[in-house]
Length: 393
Ligand SMILES: *Cc1c(COP(=O)(O)O)cnc(C)c1O
Image 1 (cartoon, protein in one colour):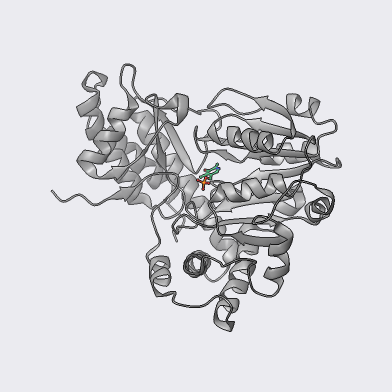
Image 2 (tube, rainbow, N blue to C red):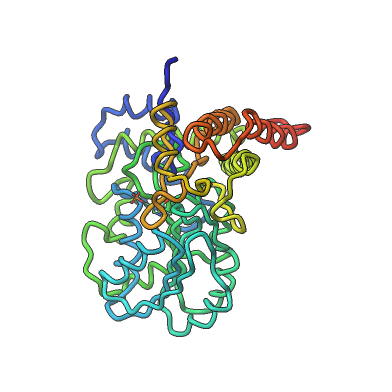
């Protein structure tokens, strides 16, 4: 049979057709009225999408560029910073803070788990910034941003959240919780290719930048703020990706019947429902989740059956079905595989990936004894339960 290539990876994610068309058609110069209009509109729409009144900026970099900016713009060498880590992306915050010679108070928990609030509270004293993920994409765990925000209320510690797979899959009340910088990336829930990072920046964070002494040039956020006020970016922007992002935000607005904030909620609900379907399907096949106590809506990490290398599962998905699922990263390679459901996924994608998983297990884990259809049925039951009454978008 034919095989269509399908991405089930937590970045890049499947592309929205309307965004692909906008990208292909984007033949323009960036210092023009035409581009300024798109750029200004996209920044305003991103504010609504993030759910903040703070300034929003777009950088021509992958998500990690905005992470670096959140360290280089907010700290001085020797500053005490708290870093929460429970996986590969937490370790990226640690490595960034180290590269900029911060004094790191590391709060580390095993992969697949989340943090103890009492431990965080006991380590905040004198911290200039706290860095964390909302979703640890390497493990499929969701962290409690709201509870950690509450610990920081009334302190001088700035709060920075890597929500690169959190935005569009998780509820945030950015301004009321007091998130000073929240970061997203283009290749995740907003359904366009890699290459853009976007972030919101609070007034407190702008003030800190005036005294922060790290060297910075390309990622000097103050330059971007000045340019954004004129509908421009400090350097040549990724014009085509911005046109794609504009189209994608228009689509999300349509998902909310003309209201972008409602569309964002619909997108979050879609990810949550897809996640519930994938979890139910995997568990019905006798598989164990890697982060069962705090599962994210963005991606589900599933442990390979005992004695089976998850690399064989990933390979079989690709060779037999041209489906790209993600292996474990670092020390989790070979132990788990990850199925993404952030952005442009629908019910039939969940049916497809779990249906394929049944065939994959029959092939690579014959002693695991699965019954064809058991996983798919579990997905169907979640769908029937969710949408028995409610209309879908
Ligand atoms: C994808 C991702 C990143 C950014 O990675 P880039 O490759 O730099 O775009 C950072 N944090 C999390 C949680 C992610 O999922």
